[in-house]
Image (cartoon, rainbow, N blue to C red; front, side):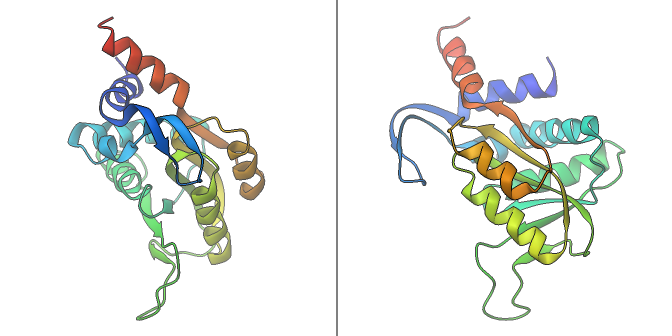
Length: 194
């Protein structure tokens, strides 16, 4: 099994639930994907870092850093940064985007890597409407980063999510490692014992 396929199995087992759920967008859904259960587990973090790194390398984005809106992006950022070093790739630094600028100290909105003009990839755990991803892209542009790609771990396939993210990304490609349909299908397969 590939890193990506193993990651899908962990997501389906640990992060996917059927039921009635209220989403942060205000809508409701018959399923929920809590990626942090996977991205904060030891094996899930390792596989997340490797799967994102493989996709970034395959696409030739060659970023100097990777980042996203806290808190969904936090474990992904750390996992990819560590994986880039452990795998002998060019090190990819990390940065986090606060939901609002700090009101004290340096008053930063971007924490971690801060080099204006740097090539960066924006990441998120789940994309539904794209609101948190869009906030991170806007903050990265405002800071002066060059956004070369946008990635999410699971895309919920909502009608407005992808178009909204692609519009904000300004031509940078948007890639999802998995769709919610793929996670659901693996979840059902695993539950049925196949």
